Image (cartoon, rainbow, N blue to C red; front, top):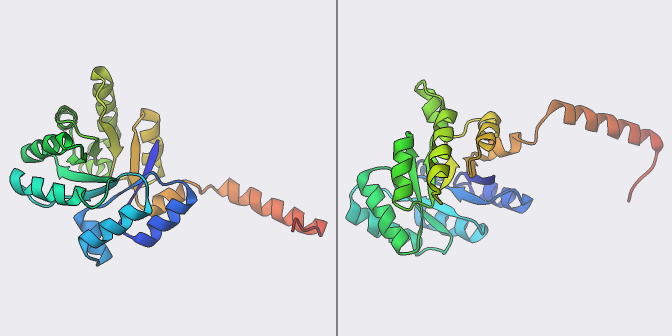
Length: 217
């Protein structure tokens, strides 16, 4: 499974990229607003840090403007994946950008039927939002499983990019189902390494090592 970090915080991106755990980055207008920085500037900086896909989102709702925005974003760097919403105009934009050879991430997916449409439009990634799905009383993992089955049935190349991840259990369940990518806040990636028995074992090893009076260096 690929790990993307869902942020526009360059410091977090650099740190995770240096760890070797990062395969890409996703951003959205809300994350850009939180960063307080110029949109195009921060997208260019992020794209220069990571080798993998960097999702940058269009904000227009009509096809013509969305396509212009998408082409402008794609021109920033070769690893830009243009994010478009799962609307009819968004799907039309997806098809046009894919014909240009541009990666496209179709976002705000909440049903398997929507995911099927995105795959038929040639989407590079489909972003089902599991956390938001859970918030309104549905099981987000059921959605991921449905999409996985449908994509496997027909051999679609579109990668399932699980979004709106809230906690490590979402990551585990996505991996069990066979999702291609999990995008999550930096703190969730770090939490994946945490376990109380790891901490307890490490403390015991260090205590015993101190009693030997030895040094590796």
